[in-house]
Length: 156
Image (tube, rainbow, N blue to C red; front, top):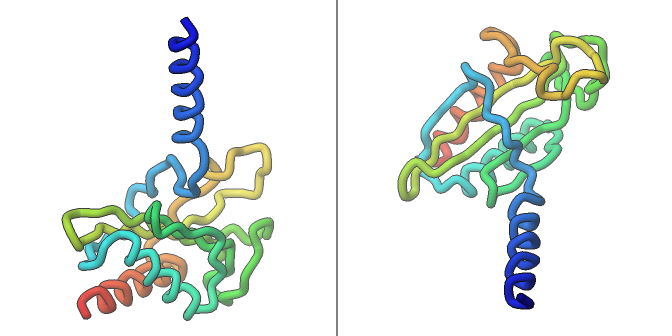
């Protein structure tokens, strides 16, 4: 009986530990997000994207090379100014997100999105209030430029 209780408690602790932590969201990128294949492992792709995002003076909100995820803070895609997450200007304010997963040894698939808010409504869950910025939006142009630069770096 004591063994059974020990196993049950150990399993519960392990299950809790496995589900906790990490920054990579459980939701998938928006349909229509930009996708590219690069010849570097997923963690290296995120490390390179961190450098590229910082070179553009954009704020990194969270990043994990181990999880293959990077997210910027909210910024105005036209003026490049940080902040504005609570701005009523829902057209220009975006947040970039990148997911990187192994496709095969030494090669990753990287997905990038520029999310913008539909409206400012704190009663709606954050992701449910976001949409993919439309084609031609300066946020999409930034994601495309970052992915192009990542691909160029990955072929060295």
